[in-house]
Length: 259
Image 1 (tube, helix red, strand yellow):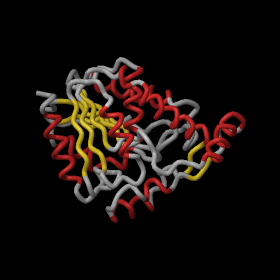
Image 2 (cartoon, rainbow, N blue to C red):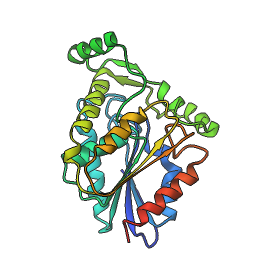
Image 3 (cartoon, rainbow, N blue to C red):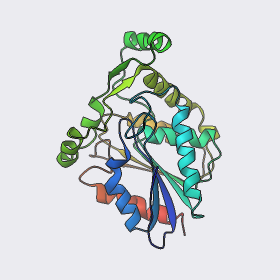
């Protein structure tokens, strides 16, 4: 876990990265929050980045939820409003955390949350994965196509190609836990806490099924929520060439909740 402090901070942002990533890919976003008066708390999810757990593998999705809970508790030590931010699988993880834990946060920001995936395995492969999850859950399979389809930014793509911390293989158990987590997120919208939700979704998402994201959002029975689709942007809306526009949009809405 890492903490970056801002002078005269008005709130704390907890950043939760996506699948295969690590906190270092959020350097630009972190600096934007800090320069706009927010402390930032961020870590690497278990099995990813600099963590010592087996890379690309988890025994249970609950380890992500527990990590997020610990980061939120650390953020609360500042005695300031807490904003929880999750991208892609990190977005799915914070949704699960908020429905299963009593986390004291003031607002949730989601970036192309993983509430459905576009490239699903065939029925045969899905059946095999269920079997392997029982007999060989740690078996690693390739998961490299995601990041290469994440952004149109050549600068980011080049950086990712040289990044040894990116996870390019995931275990069968990891995949089955992801599928289960997505299903539970859709089934538990009625358990979601009454907090503001700000969701930005890539319109040209090649990884996450944007229609499933919209379905989840529409079923969310809360009073204050906003959804904005960015038509031409790829999955990582905050790593796209237009990321300044996306950040200014988020910053404007978040400030309304931390006065």
